[in-house]
Amino acid sequence: MAKSILNKKSLKFLENYLNNAAPTGYEWDGQKMWMDYLKPYVDEFITDTYGTAVAVINPESEYKVVIEGHADEISWYVNYISENGLLYVIRNGGSDHQIAPSKVVNIHTKKGIVKGVFGWPAIHTRSRAKEEPPKPDNIFIDIGAKDKKEVEKMGVHIGCVITYPDEFHILNKDKFVCRALDNRMGGFMIAEVARLLKENKKELPFGLYITNSVQEEIGLRGAQMIAERIQPNVAIVTDVTHDTTTPMIDKKKQGYAKIGAGPVIAYAPAVQQRLRDRITDTAEDKKIPFQRSALSRATGTDTDAFAYSGSGVASALISLPLRYMHTTVEMVHREDVENVIKLIYETLLNIEKGETFSYFEN
Image 1: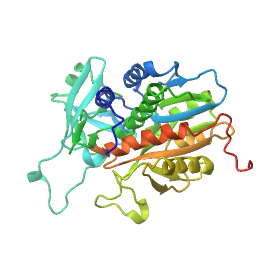
Image 2: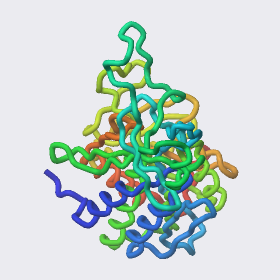
Image 3: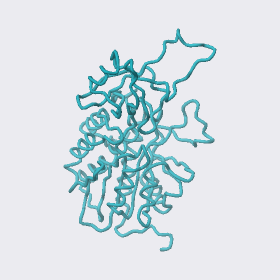
Image 4: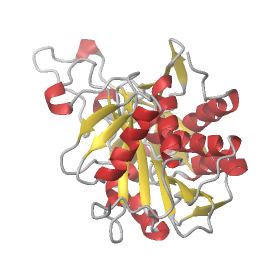
């Protein structure tokens, strides 16, 4: 087996980074952790008003390459407080209402974290003939308050953000499990690329912008803003994609991808063909296993924001296969994580300064 590229320090950072809450719109604590980790490996940082963080190598170069992930995780907002002290919620991103009942939650207030639980009627009290499923308008949180006044006294109000506290662990030695692997893993993997470049003393002939964008989960907003600021020549985005080998997923609709089988390289209108071919050629040359996926119209990732920014940016998407997306038990394979890192790293070493990846050049 090849030597692991992840060391104790990087795995400890990953654990701390995942365990920290970073809901959409509230990513700054996680971004500070990410920047602190990257500090020894880069030349400078850029941040913006909404919290996107960019670590830069060779900032003086006019030719700019972005490698990107997004920092935010799905969450809930307090939307209504009943007179008997129960909280009703709305989504902040694509939170799955069906997993909510019986989950413990953290409610973020100015007074600190208030614990609560998504309650649900006991099985004995539900109608077997007409059992009502969890829906966004019937799930609720109980924080142990006797009434609305006590809720407010605890510091909970309309607009408080709610996250799950589920923390990082490893199953069977090589499966990473946690909430928010989508897409905190992206931020981790691009940080590891920067570490390897520094430790291996690799000099790039261009400026590298290691970008951890905010607000992807509600419409690629952070990537839209930072793409306009950086104005890169090339963007390689990493996100997660579905492992489709688990039950109840139709492969004819969703395609085929499997954890442990390598990074997934996307085919889509926003993916620039020659840049994508450079990535697949690199994978084949370096014997990095990979899979392919076809995406109709949009990728649904920050790739779309970079590709269509300005006058157009040569962009590509390398995805990490993941099981149980938007749950608290998201799962990825350690080997896939390492191979995404290797693929981005080796592709960067295979890009020349000034390349346009144009179809109209020999």
